[in-house]
Length: 254
Image (cartoon, rainbow, N blue to C red; front, side):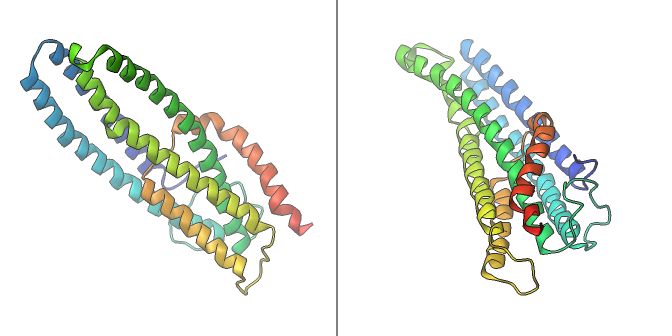
């Protein structure tokens, strides 16, 4: 279980900004409903414009801190796997593979562990987000049956549903999960035939490809994994990871 990682503070700042983003989003949404009930179309439009400007700023700054965190995380990954010193303040038990020697094998196992945790956490996040979207979909269908023109709050709710907050986040999370699951499965097949020597084989080149694919997926999705879910699942996933590690990797040395 991780004691320290140099990227943590940047991730925390990014998550804090994201929480503020969410609070502002919901406050403006609720105000839009209240003003709609009072037939204040002018102020609804003003709030919509403010929403776009304000949330864009918070999203941009949040992405900046996440990008910094990911860069540090990648350098720490290399330090932990190869013994380099790219980060002056290295992680402490961020990876559960300290018993292994530095080199290609440790790169493989660290990447394997990363993809396993990312796959499991994003899978639970996807189920949570799916349930939330189902609830809002039922509300939208209800308004569709009743008639959007018969309700002044129907338009703000429809705008909420069609916004990035719901549909695009669901698409992004689902794409992230599929890609990280593919990475995890690729690593399972690679480790069966991987020989840890200095001469790079086809499987070793494939390992580099999987590593790049994993990092590109993280960078392009710009997705923050749920800290609460991570903390809830950390212990159980660590135990499950130990079983996977010994099944696919450690037993090869016996």
